[in-house]
Length: 383
Ligand SMILES: [Ca+2]
Image 1 (cartoon, rainbow, N blue to C red):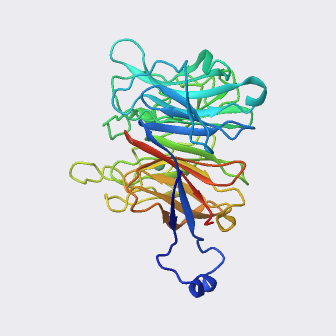
Image 2 (cartoon, helix red, strand yellow):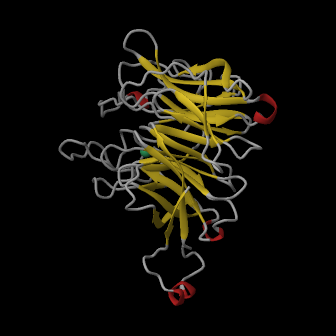
């Protein structure tokens, strides 16, 4: 295992550390647990185990022992469509994994011809056979579209249900006819299903004429992170804006999150505004946090979790969000739904950050990079 030591702010003397407020950042070390991962996308600890399960976008799954760095391939992954941003995406052990062995996944898959869509499914992990078995598709996002862009997606479990967040498939319709504003489309939406994949009767649009009953919230662009707030239990998500306008949102039942009718980003080409920025009273749910337009200030997120654990006591309750383009792990304090930036972790290391989770046993911060030869790292307190 390769170790590097970091202190920040840079060259912070001991006297200065003592003078800093309690929220100041301690130093940390970085263990590189594994290298050479090919386009990894998501990771999760297997409950009651020190092992992690990791997806590779090309359609492979591995189980990794972070102590030794040993990796074991797992067969039985779904067939994926790797066009564009597609492939095998999120992975999450079921709440009853200890009994059922079930693992939930999302992936991009073809649905006839050139059309593809994000799928949500589950399979049972057979450890002895090193295999996922009994793969079931629980839901395929409708409608399927001929596009390689914006599949989302992330999975969380809450309130006895499975929630998953998807993308808008890269639609360039910037008006009210955009699919994220269309309640018959599950693209650009969060859905809520029973653990068996059925649509609950108490979903906000269940039974409404022309609406997709699985939708829980809509008006999203491309959801790349979802996590639960440790105190409120709310679902938090992060989504990419156009050029800037990246958002962190707190998910409300039936909420319309505005894309693309309220947006703080601008067009990639020409930097033109196409909508009013989010504002109170515009009829859309405003983001908890939004980054401004422009490539210098934006924050294309991927992976997000609240810190819990004993290893970094000062960061308890802080929010960690991976930043793809600017290649760092953002650390934010959170107070009543308001975020303040605290530090850029791993800044300057040259890693697009794809996913972040907290070790349930050790409280270390596990960080998965993006790319064709990507490392899995963990932040640990200095020795
Ligand atoms: Ca929004």
